[in-house]
Image (cartoon, rainbow, N blue to C red; front, side, top):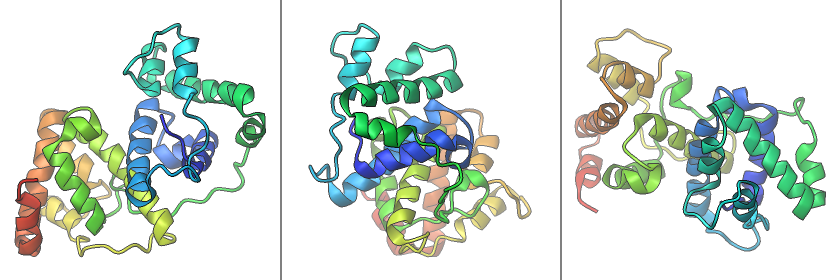
Amino acid sequence: MVITSNLFGLLKKIKNNPKVYLGKSSLFILDHFIGGYSGKEYEIEGWSRTSTLCLRKFQKFIEGIYNLPATTKGVCRIIAENTTNDEEAFYKFFELLEKYLEQAHPNLACEFSADERTDIYIPSVKISASGQAMTISTDLLKLLKVIKARPGMYLGGVSLKVLNHFINGYLFKESEIGGDGRIPVVCFQGFQEYIENAYNLQATTKGVFTIIAENTTNDEEAFHKFFELLEEYLECTHPDLACEFKASL
C-alpha cells in the first residue's frame, strides 16, 4: 500500500469525519475510494519520491501484527479478514495505522492523531452516490473504458458497488486538482436525466448507480448495465466519443 502525502492528509480527514467523505464508517468503501483517489494521483504524478511518504513498510507491519508470511493480500483485505464486520474493520485500519506511525514516524503520528473536526473541506465534486448529477471528465471516460475491459485489474471483480466507490475517489481527487470542482468535463450533465428517462423516473435525488442497482437483479448485472447505458447515451449525444469508447484497447 503506497500512501502519498496527499493521501495521508485525506486519510486524516476521513478518520475524523468518515460519514462526510464515505457516507459511513466502512473499510470496504474506504478501500475502493482510496483506489480511485490514488489512481488519479498516479495518473498525474506517478509515485515520485517527493510525493510518497515512507510508509511502504506498512504492509509488512500489518503482516507482522497478524503473524502472516509475505502475502499478495493487501492491507485492507488482511484487516477485513481478521475483524467481525466492516465498521470494526474501518476503525481497526486507523488504529493499526496510528500504531505503525508511532513506531516508525512519531512526528507524523502526532499530526495524524490531531482532531480536526472543525476544519472540514469538501470539494464540490458531483458524486453520484449522493444523488447529485454525475459529471464525467474526459480523463474519467478514458478510465471507464479501461475498467470496462479489465474490471478485475482495477476493481478486483465485476461490481457496480465497487465501481461507484472507486469513481467517487477518482472524482474527489480531480476536484482537488481542479480547484473546488472546476475541472474540464465533457458535456455529460445530461447522463443523470438520460438514466431517469430510461427507467421512466421523474426527477429524483437518487444517483445513477442507485437507480441502476435498484433495477437489476445483482451487482454484476448492474455493472454491465451501467456500461450499456453509458454507451447508449454516448451514441445519442456524442457519436464520436461513442466510437472511441467502444473501440478495443
